[in-house]
Structures are given as structure tokens and as C-alpha cells.
Amino acid sequence: MNDIPEIPKCMSTQHPDNVHIPFFAENAQLGGEDEVREAYYAYSHLGCREQMWDCEGKEVDNFVVKKLLARYGSFFGEHPLGKDVFLTLRVPNPEVEKAEAKVLLETLESIPRSYDVAHLFSENNVPPIFQVILPMTSSYPAIDNIYQYYRDFVVGQQYKRLGGREKTIADWIGRFYPEKIDVIPLFEDQPSMLNAAGIVGRYMEDKDLAYQRVFLARSDPAMNYGMVSAILLNKVALFRLHLLAEETGVSIYPIIGVGSAPFRGNLGPETVERCTAEYPSVHTFTVQSAFKYDYPQDRVRQAVATLEEREVSTPMEIEEEEALQVVGKCTARYMESVTILSNMINRVAAFVPSRRKRKLHIGLFGYSRSMGGVTLPRAITFTSALYSIGLPPELLGLDALDSDDIEFLREVYVNFDADLVDAVRYFDPESEYVPASLTKTVCDLVDVEPDLEHLECVASVRLALKEGRTADVRSGILRAANIRHFLG
Image (cartoon, rainbow, N blue to C red; front, side, top):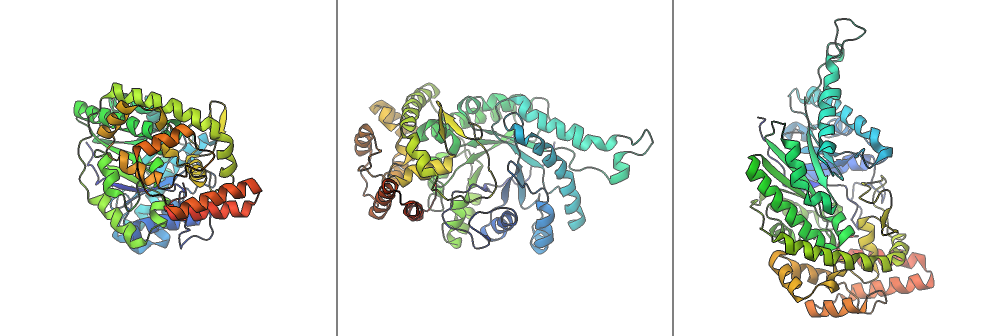
């Protein structure tokens, strides 16, 4: 068995949901060298112990370890990569991202090179990178292929002999480390999330693992099925993973991908205790860009420390049959509503500012999101577009639920009412895009004073759209986002 490292409870990510531009960025769209600086900033200034590094987009930087050590040697001399702080790569899924498939191989090949750089820097044997995240996981072979490829072809090549002579590749250019890597599956759609325990259990069968990390999406399931459905699917998956850990004796450390908008997880510096209470068995929570850059630095540091210091406990047991019935009802109405709104969503989305240069994780519907023949933007832009016309996406699908469903939700969804309050304060019932049935449902569920400044902003966005004043649309979107403390 391997020793279990002290697994971080907070993972900084590159999700571009921020309104404000960080002080170290060269321009409004972070990319390239900005992201190297961002990783150091997350470690050194915010106290995040783990940075997720996306390797799915263009201009992938496989020399990030070399750059970090060269520029910030004093910090990493005291806080070694792979021991005190961690860099975790999110790689392309070759089964889905065909154009990016060979980037996976390049990324895996870079791991031993990063080890060599770190070894020369510190003369220790700690690999700076030993974990990769596989997005859109849907099967056991998808995870195992990466594990086996690294072991057999990246590390295994060192034993091959050159030209039939005695000298091996290892004799020629040195040994390859680490000898194996941990593969973290990321489950993002309903079938895969519900089968996560089965897939992970099969992956662990023939391996001597001390532990296994498992990543559950929260943002993309909300985009696909609605917020309520996303939360219930996560709770079912987390409980099944808990049972798997008990059955196998292998510790499972769940990660959940949460953003600042309630629709995408409602994790901001002001809501840490609430969000962690919703998912008590989750070991690691993601800290996305709005969390890091749309609040004062001292408040962010304090919130990160709270995440790292909290106790992890067992998940709530959930009545799966009833949960999945609610998921079915909510999803159907949510998809119906989104289809009707799709033209307006896409129109407004064109004015939402981009915060990253690189093309990030493509999501479940391919290079453009399509649902029932309707093309949609990515989750952050989608969320921003709906907030910008006065219709928080958290509310879509709620009008399909009856009183028994609501009672069930209040039992299993700890922050149901609190999350609705957070969303409804930005709800504009005067918006022509709000279904009448939804207004009645919202009024019956929650009574909250609206944010008048936000209402004024979204009304101005709708008017500017009608009158074709594109600059005013853009400025209105940003003003409203600044009030909320997240772009989308």
C-alpha cells in the first residue's frame, strides 16, 4: 500500500465565472503566463493547497512545473509540489474530445519530465504531479486506459533496448518517475453519476489502491437537468460511493465542482458553511474564479482556511426512488423552459465577456451545447445570460413540482429555502421572459425583498437589447454581475 498524502479539501480551478480581473493578469482574458501566476497566487496568497490545471484547450502549457519552480523557487523550496501543495491535471477524454485526443498522450509524457525538473530543484523524490482528472467519464475502461497507458507506455518504454543493443532507454536518458499515476474520474451526466460507484468499484478491483478520489460535477448537471436535479443526483451518487468505500475498505475522497452562483453550487466566501453542510461527505470543494477574485483577499483566505479545517462526515441517506421521480419531473419542465428561452439565451450570451483565452472543458454536448436540437452556450455563460434578463436559472423546473415534492426537497436538500432566497432576490417578475406559472410558484415558495439595483440593471439590459444598444447590454451585464459577485 502507498502512503496516503494529506489530500487537500480545497481545489483552485480555472473556471471563468469572475467579474473582476485579478491584479496579476495582463488583460481581461487570463491565459498562458497569467495562469502560471494564478497557480502561485492560489497557493501563496489564498492558502489553496491544490490547483487544477486544464490540459484540454489550446496553448496547453506542459512546462508549468518548470516555470513555477524557476520563478517562485523560494516558496516551493518551503512548500514542495506534490507534498505540501498539489498540481492536478485535467486531461482530454479521447473518447469524446477527438480533436484533443493526442494532447492526452503529450500530457502524460510530460509528467516524468516534470519529475526530473522538481528532483533537480529539491533533490527529493516527491513527484510534483501524480494525479490526473478524466472529464466526462462514463465507463471503467475510460479510466483504466489512462492508468495502463501511463504505466505500460510512458514509464514502460524505459526498459526498451535501442537498436538491439544492451543499452535501454533508461540507461540513455534516465529512469522514469513516478512509476504510476492516480486517475480521478469526473462524472458529469445523469447515467454516469448514478453509475459512478459501479464504475469506480470495477476500476479498483485489480489494483492495490490506498485510496481513490472521485470527482462529481455540479455545474454541468444543473445546466443539463436543472438545479434541483443536479443536487439530488449528487446526493444519490455520494451515498452510493460511501457504500462502496464501506464494502471495499478502500477510502474514497469525493470532490465536487461547485461555482459561486446558486445554480452552479452556491460556494462563495460567504456561504462556505452552508455549502459544506449540504455535502458533508465531500472531501474537496472547488474554488472557482469568482470566489477568488470577486471578494476581498482577506475574506477569501479566511474562507479557504475554513474549507481546509472542516471535518468531513458521512453523507445523508436519501430515498433514491423518490429522489429520481423528482429529478424526472424537474428535468422535463426545465428542458421545456430552456428550449423556449434558447433564442434569447444565445442572444444575450453573445455579450457576456470571456475571462479565459483558452478553450476550456467542452462539456457533455460536444463543442456546442445542444439539447433537443437547441444549441446553448457553456454553463457559466448560460447562467449569466439568464440572470441578466431577470430570470435566475435556479427557478426553472420548480413549477413542475407539487407540495409533496417540495416537502421531500426540504427534507433532503438542506439549503433549499436559503438557496432560493439567494436566487429570488435577483428575480424580476416583470420580465417578459418569465413563464406565468413560474412566477406563482416562486411567490408561493419564498418571500424576499428584491435587489432593486439589480432589477434596474436587468431591465436596462432588456431595453438595450430591444433597441440594439450593444454597448449598454455589455455594461448592464457587468453591472448586474458585480452586484451578485459572480458572472455566471
